[in-house]
Image (tube, rainbow, N blue to C red):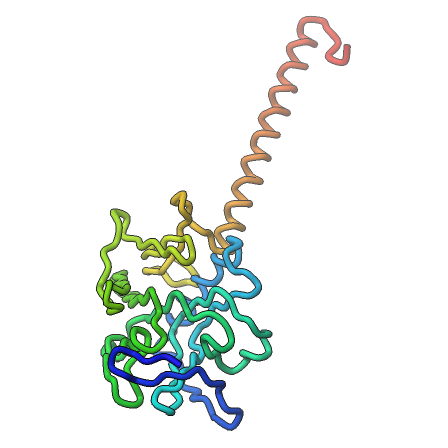
Length: 249
């Protein structure tokens, strides 16, 4: 059990089988794509262990003063779950089924107040839930229209404070040993702002389509080098023949 600074009692209980989860649609068509892009590069970059959980619009549970609270962040990362994937099929309860999330991201929608809500009464607001209940060390609010990323982290009083990005507009996420930041480009026929990962050497973690394109360019370059070498060899053989020499000798 955890008591917050305001003496809220928090317990970590499983979602009862008879609870019907809301089946609300996402706020807009961009949200699933933004979330999928974050997971895609982590997996292809070898940064998504089998025991990790990268969730999209998926319920994370806590019981606050004996009332079940379920929030479904647009994207969240849990470093390690301690149960089988089947046991977290419907929802995830931190501290009972594994680690708390180390990153939670919300993508701004038309109901922007939700992402900043510090409402403490039931049901609590998202900002309050992530800060005081889940105690997520990195809470990001991303605006896909402007490319703005706000990242909130704890100060010495375990209270969220807006952090400052580095000179590249990125934030170092120590729990993942990666940088997170906005990037503008095209994916899934959407030209706009995305969130991307960079490693400690400032190398961008590629999406699948980028890896395919990189491999295609590498293969083309190899073919061009091979063609150039063949042409050079043909010129050399022609020169030897012109000099009355057999190229095969």
